[in-house]
Structures are given as structure tokens and as C-alpha cells.
Amino acid sequence: MAEIIQTKLDVLGGGPGGYGAAFLAADRGVQTTLIDAAPKPGGTCLHVGCIPSKALLHAADVIHSARDVAQFGIQYGEPQIDLAAFRAKEFKIVDTMATHLLELCKRREVKHISGRGTFVDDHTIQVENGPQVRFAHAIIATGSTPTKLPALDIGSPHIWDSTAALKLESIPKTLLVVGGGYIGLELGTVYAALGTKVTVVELTPTLLPGVDPDLVQPLQARLKNEFANIFLSTKVAQLAETKGGVQVTLEGDVPEKQMTVEKVLVAVGRKPNSAGFGLDKIGVAVDAKGFIQVNEQRKTGVPHIFAIGDVAGEPMLAHKAAHEGKLAAQIIAGDTTLVWEPRAVPAVVFTDPEIAWCGLTETDAKKQGREVKVGKFRWGASGRAATIGRNDGVSKVLVDPKNDMILGIGASGPGAGELIAEGVVAIEMGATAKDLALCIHPHPTLTETISEAAETLHGLASHFFVMKKKVV
Ligand code: FAD
Ligand code: NAD
Image (cartoon, rainbow, N blue to C red; front, side, top):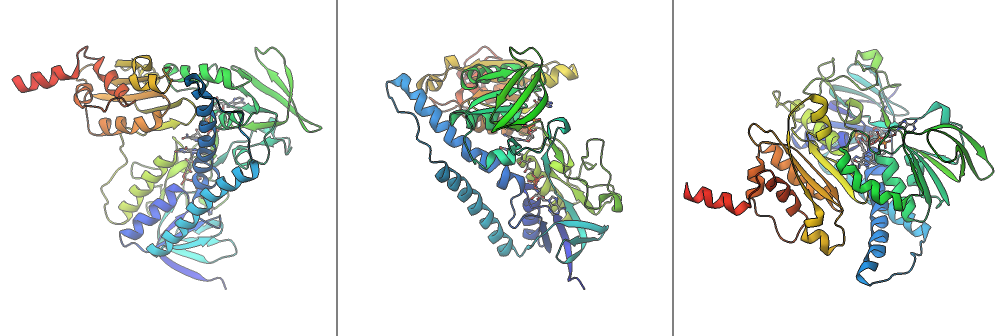
């Protein structure tokens, strides 16, 4: 007879959405159980996503910086890479954080169960080779997995998904990246810095489709030098395993239709993990793409069962998952009137340069037929950008022409991912471009590019507004 555990809240999936929800619920006094298929919590983000990829990108960044400093007359030699040590460092970063999460479960008295869970009914989850958990409330936080392209799924060890690429088993001489989105460009950047000749094949006419073209442009210009080839509006028609590599057949406007590479990284998106664990049995509905359907409180059609994070819809980002998890936990803890209504969910592509945006983008404004005013500041005029030898960036602020309210902010350049947090605060606090221009930004920093972008909307220096305020 399987062990039976009674719990007030059962969280299924221990990624940033799931463990964030479990910890907050426990802090609010809700007796909580966290079930995750892996031995330690952390999910995609910690084990095979954000954290290992950013550790590898940090190393790539140092390699780039060492090369870029040549313009200051300082020369380093070619990097000597000890792959085993690099891998060990990546593993240690991840494992230390995962062990810490286990410790936090203990400290908060969250019962952590390692095993795959399946719904038996709408108040019971059976853990594979483990206990049966009976719950009053559940939060489904089962995340997502890489999308496979059936035509390219030839079962070869030379074909990687992001998880395989992060294992850093070898530095291939050549790598074909299928998909010029977040993962393709971030991991392409890592391998190119390690010395691999990287070719990117993107189906649409632009890298990072959907991102404002003026933000993508500085990245695309730099990647032209970093990558061997970038083929846009191109498709991989066929892959065939050869001795020690893969023969690739391309369709599109490319110089050669055939090429042979050592490895192929397929990074064409991710799909929600919503099948195979009994959702159909309990009446939790999914949409055509497999996302669990939820309302503004992240409740499914079964009101005591919530769904959050990647499994509950776009954007598939760790911070969005974490915030939805906290929302669900608070509602379960008794704050029953809360709803999901952020004005600005930030997004960062951690390439070199980084690209970051939040709130409304110019692309979306155009799609919606919404009129916006855009203030743009090119980093060629930034003192800080000059001191680091990187004047190719751009920052911009989108406002409502009726009242100057900031609707969106975007930036492309080194450290853009850090700059964007100011944009989120400005939008969430209902700031105007004038407010942003009035705030004194430290000099010389790249943060000035944001206030300068805001100032361009008014054509006046910020001191003018301060004077006017004092006089009136
Ligand atoms: P996940 O983190 O996917 O966690 C879900 C957990 O549920 C997993 O542990 C899974 O094993 C478990 N699970 C699934 N089914 C069951 C079941 N039936 N029973 C028990 N357990 C189950 N986002 C960012 O914001 N910034 C980044 O820099 C970033 N970089 C990324 C880099 C890569 C290479 C990848 C792949 C993703 C990256 N992401 C990034 C996306 C980010 O990882 C996800 O958005 C985030 O992890 C989603 O969190 P989640 O809690 O919804 O699910
Ligand atoms: P993505 O949606 O970012 O990019 C996939 C790309 O593949 C798109 O440009 C798409 O047009 C292209 N594509 C689709 N089919 C293709 C085909 N047959 N041939 C060539 N190109 C094709 O997806 P991803 O890069 O796999 O990342 C998945 C998700 O993970 C992201 O959308 C994001 O939500 C998350 N992620 C976030 C970060 C971050 O926050 N920095 C990093 C990595 C991943």
C-alpha cells in the first residue's frame, strides 16, 4: 500500500515558478509539498537553462573583452581552454544552488518529493515509485521542453538540443545552429567564443523575430564577424549522419545548398509540458499549442488548481514564472482578490551586445495600430560607451503622445540587461518621460543613455524642468 501524504498545497514542478510558489506559501503558513521529477529542485532554469547558459556566456564575455582591449594597446594571447575545468565550474555553480534550494525546503518545512507526479483525480497526485499526495490546492508548474522538428530528428548524437549543448562535452570545429532566437544566438555566442565556426540558419527574414529591428541591428552587425555565416529566410531541408558529423541540406538563398558540420544545435522554440500526467482526467484544459488555459488569477477551469510559468503561456521566462507562482501562492494563502496585471515583463537576450526591452515594443505598437512617440539615444554620444570602446548601442523610450506616459523601454548594448530594470520600475510606477529626464543619472554610466533617450522627447536639458518647477 503506497504511503499517503495529506497536504494543503501540492506544487507539481520545482522550477523557479514552482519553488518560488512553494516557499512563499510556506512563509504564509500554508502546509506545502513540492514534487519534482529531478533529484534536486531548480527546474530548467537552474539545471539546463538560465544559470548554466549564463555561466558559459560569462566566460565568452571575458574572452571578448580580452580581445576588445587590444584597441587600448593591451594584447592577450589566444585563450587556453581546459574544457574539463570549465565544465566542472559550470556544474559546481548549478549544484551549489540546487543544494541550497533543498536546504531552503527543509528550513521552510516544505516537503520535497523527488519523482514524476501524475494526477489520479482532482485532489490526488501519485508520485512514480513514491507516495500518493492528497491536496486541497495544487499549482501545476511543469515547465517546458525543447521543440523537436520531426524532419530533423534523425536520432544522431551529433544533433544537440540546448540541454546537450550545455553539457560542453566537446568544442566542435563547426556547428550549425537551427533557429536564430534566444537559445541559438546565446549558445552560438558561447561556442563561437570557444573557437567553433558557427553557422546560424533562421527561417524568418530577421534574427530574433518580433524584437524591434533597431535593437537587433547592433547585434547582427557584430555577429557577422563572430559567426561564420548567418542565413536568413532559410530552412534546413534534410540532415544525414556522416562519419563524425552531419550533412546538411539547406533551402533558401544560400551560396551552397549542402554543407557538412560536426554538430547541429536545434533551437526552434520550446513546448509546454502539459501532456502525459493526467490533466485530461481532471478537466484541466489546454489550448492548441498545449498551454494550460488559466484566468487572470492563474486558476485553471478547476478552481482549486492553478497553473503558472512556461506551462501556462508566453513569455517563457523564469522571472515571469516566479511572479506568477508568487501570485498563486498568495491567493491560496488568502489574498483572494489579487490578479495578474504587470505593465512590464522584461526580456533580455544575453548576447554581445545584450538586447533588453520591457512594456510595449515599437513592433507591437505598429501591429496594434497604436500611436507612440519614440525617443532614441545612440551610444555613439555616450561618454561611458566611449570609455569601454563600445559605441554601437542604442537606448529608446516609447511614450503615449497624449500624456508622455512611458509605455516601453528598449536597449541594445553591453549591460542592457541590467539597464532595463530601471525601465520596469518607471513603467510600473506610471512615470512620464519627463520624470525620467528629471532624475539625475550618475556620470559616466550607461544608465545615462536611458535618461538621454527620454530627454530627446522634449528637446531640453533636464535642469530646465527643475528650474521651471522651482519658479512656478
Ligand atoms: P521549469 O523551470 O521548466 O521547471 C519545471 C519542472 O517541473 C522541471 O524540474 C521538470 O522536471 C518538472 N516536471 C515536469 N513534469 C513533471 C511531473 N509530471 N512531475 C514532477 N515534475 C515534473 N529564462 C529567463 O528568464 N532568463 C534566461 O536567461 C533564460 N535562459 C534560458 C536558457 C536556456 C538554454 C533555456 C532552455 C531556457 C532559458 N530560460 C531563461 C527560460 C527559463 O528556463 C524558463 O522560462 C523557466 O525555467 C520556466 O520556469 P517553470 O518553473 O515554469 O518551469
Ligand atoms: P525562440 O522562439 O526564441 O527562437 C526560435 C527561432 O527558431 C525563431 O527565430 C524561429 O523563427 C526559428 N525557427 C523555427 N522553426 C525553424 C526552422 N524550421 N528552421 C530555422 N529556424 C526556425 O526559441 P528558443 O531559442 O528555442 O528558446 C525558447 C524559449 O526559451 C525562448 O522563447 C525564451 O522564452 C526562453 N529562453 C529565454 C532566454 C533568456 O531569457 N535570455 C534564453 C534562452 C531561452
